[in-house]
Length: 280
Ligand SMILES: O=P(O)(O)OC[C@H]1O[C@H](O)[C@H](O)[C@@H](O)[C@@H]1O
Image 1 (cartoon, rainbow, N blue to C red):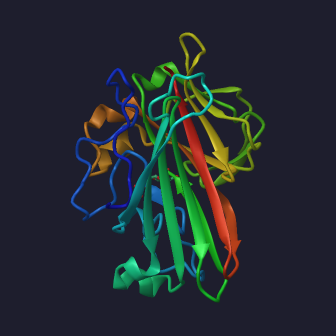
Image 2: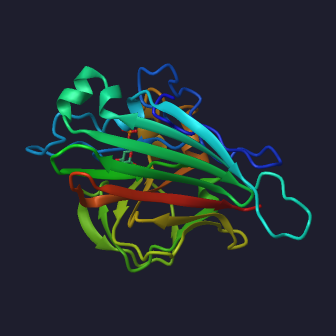
Image 3: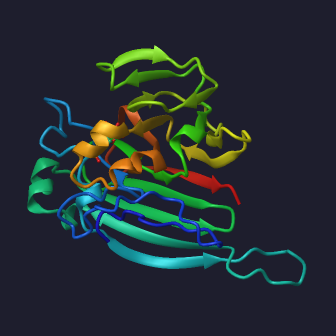
């Protein structure tokens, strides 16, 4: 329930797909280093003079206690007489303003409801978030699914689907660039916010060996993608990151809406999510 963070996703062969730090703190005293933390309602350090200014980095969703709303499964119809067993299973989690710590509620005094749905299908994993404004005031938010993918070797992957997109390079003083590579290699500390990606075009983590997708990430209403790898020094500097060399086995490709604020009017609902198709 803590942060509604998915910490493990295994394929039928038992292979783990998500990176979870060996020193991830799971007792609720710190956001979980790994898996899929939910970033809401602010991304990164909050700006000054904004409704989110008093919140911690990445907001409160990843460090609040959510509630389990229930499980549902669906079976496919019409595949002859043979009934397919559980094509997908969905777990729903909820968080609302009344469940926040006093501190978070004071820092962000809006009436809201979040429903986070985690759906496991035979083809992949979908995680999606519904944000409801239950109050009488509009509010602004950013949202991001901070997915830590587990990979065998950072030197053997490429990130595709970002060519020609504008990005903010947080390693280079938030300077603005245009991606020229159709196939991005990660060879150093990387922290980039790619903006305004094309809807329906997946971002792909592919194998440099055979050029085949390892993970394919499709987004709904999440137009920005953050690519993050702390590399050696930063990884060593994070108390909850282990092993030190673990940065070679992870890449964060984070689908979000973070380049600008989403305004949610009183009574309105917003929904967005990602579907991750692994190499099967
Ligand atoms: O250490 P955290 O608060 O979990 O943040 C981890 C990382 O999240 C995102 O990827 C940001 O772009 C990075 O700047 C940040 O370092």
